[in-house]
Length: 227
Image 1 (spheres, rainbow, N blue to C red):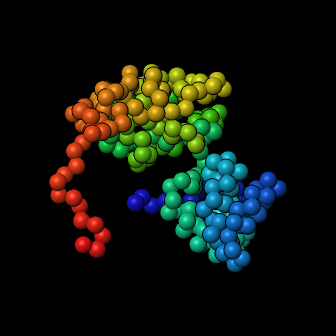
Image 2 (image 1 turned 135 degrees about the horizontal axis):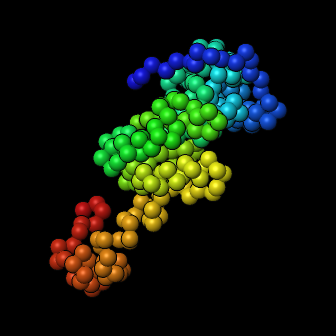
Image 3 (image 1 turned 90 degrees about the vertical axis):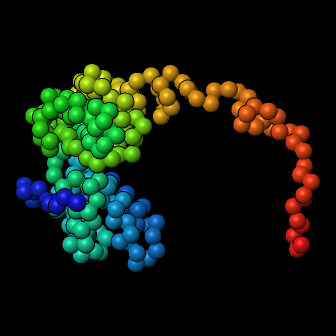
């Protein structure tokens, strides 16, 4: 596991907005009295959103104080879970999966587009729109290569459709979430290729297509309970 540290440059302070405080009240109310620390992960997640996509050190202290926890305990949570960004990110934070299935399916080409359109890893574009980072498996191997941008997955990428995706996001145009080709979900593109015989799904049919509705009963009946 890589060492995760707080960003060198930090804001002077952080305060809960009324909206974030309302969320905190609702999250804490889900747990028994005295167990408000159980809300630390969801409250950090909401705080990260309110702070512009990352968790500055004053925000971490604010969450700890709100939950009555030592500051170091909340910092431990933040440095353990990679879902928490400890340095600023762009408006659209691209997490590029570089694990083996994506790598074999063209992740290096998608990485080249990131470098071309955004810059090096962790770099934020001058207008604050994009930043990117290579991450471990995001669990969409069937749809490789893929990226996660903020809360959404974009799958079945090619350099061409990924460039268009970034351009559309930058221009504020609507984009399609999920596979960027013709398929829906993770089924084969163009439809099913195996087990296409309808007889296989007829009630009472067997694997070879013969009916099992009138299957003979074995002469050796199963023993009844107690025998």
